Image 1 (cartoon, rainbow, N blue to C red):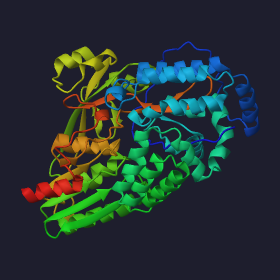
Image 2: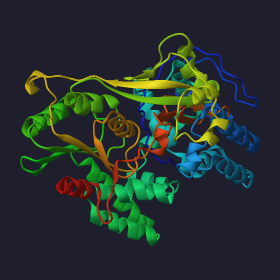
Image 3: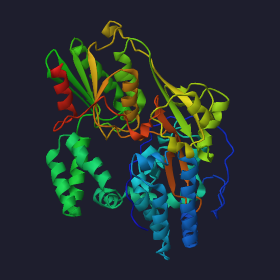
Image 4: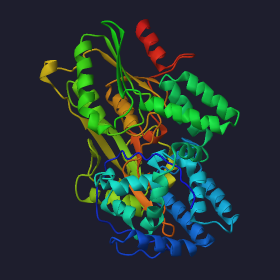
Amino acid sequence: MKKWALIAIAVLFLAACGDVEVESYEVEIYEEESQEEISYEEISQKVESQEESFGIQHFLDDLDYILHVLETNFALFDVAYWARGADISAIGENARQTILDDPYMDVDGFYNVFLQHFAPLLNIGHLNIIDPAAHLRFHNNPRIYPHSVLTEAASARLRYPHVMAFYEPRHHIAANTAIEEIVAHQLGFMTERQIQMFFVDRAVLYGEEQLAEDLARALADSNYDEAVGLIIAIMRAINNTPNVVTEIIEEGRIARLAVSSFMLHEQWPYFEQQIFGFYDEIRDFDHLIIDMRRNTGGDMQFFYNKIMAPNIAETHTGEGFAFLKMGDYAAEHTTNLYRREFTWRVGIRSDDRQVSPIAQMLEEFDLPEFRQEDTERLEYGFRTVTIVRARPMARFDNQPAFGGKIWMLTGEMMGSSAQISAWLSKDTGFATLVGDITGGVCGGPLTMVALPNTGILFQMDVFYVTDRYGRPLEAGTVPHYFNREGMDALETVLSIINYQ
């Protein structure tokens, strides 16, 4: 049994639940049994007999199922290509050829083929392959995927017998693999752009310019042993950096607040104390710069309750749209639209309580930035509203905590709830955005898919979420001001402020 890469899993969306009928897909599949507890010995025996019976056709059938699910449920199928350069059809054909070229392939080899070929799709619309380490975390703490994130049906797939048969015997390998091996394996399945963004560019954002330069050189020289060591050093530097950083740039005039993550729930009371104390200190300043460039997402409530709501005097409402391909997995999240108000993320809900055919949507609403080519895949849509209510507090005299002009620094690392914060800030006028186009990773509620033969799991978002003009959030939010030549976002915003 081979060792496994540690692929980061970000569970960031809250989704509605509903009972639905799912459409069938004809493949030769492993017979699913009732979800009763079975012993480790039974699972080990089952996985041995199961894997011995696997042949190339089983892997091809699983690949066909992946492509079928993406074609009929992944509303971002086309956005992945034109916005992120990932051609799903070509990826599928290349994976098929790799499988056909190895008549002795086993299930571990198929898993690696899945990782290798689908790597360009990882984190587009939260698409991710669930590795044994991630499954082990779920196994030890099922609340990682609460019902507010996955429907009951999607959550149940994590425990299907044939899924457990794949993952449970590999849990101990994942738990005992050295970090150096994990990083080395992960590098082998990442695209050059992913390595650049997640390690080199990120090191720069965390002030580790020398590590970034050394890593870029090691990668250019194909010195992967050195690269692994440098990546581990970058990861440690990031982990040792405070999540919330406050800074007085110019006394009485300009302040900066940087937030690296909206996760770390257990530390939220401390972060709130730190941020609100900073608001007390800078209340009479002219400019507050909210630096979000390092933020890859988390729980949107962080942004609502600690950044936006305390700094507005009245309710702010962001407007947008969600479109979908009504496949079986997408239907799990949309059936309730016909019966009651639909909420797929706290604060974001359907405006009209039901979906409408996309042709009707495009006729009724003016969406100048919607790509007409994408209508070939999309079938239905609905309006969304995002409501953030002011949070008046006595410590701030029941007024906005900060009364000056608010800016937000943006960049490609910003995804998921950080992406939403950028869109919402621009849509409502809460902040002026400066920097680069944000990173997307924003396609509505999350679902979990179990491959019918091998039991390998992958996750994905099922909606095509747009701003009020029809631009998909997966393509990122365009800032008001791009970085000036030779300047980063902070230097750019300071030059704009000082020019005014």
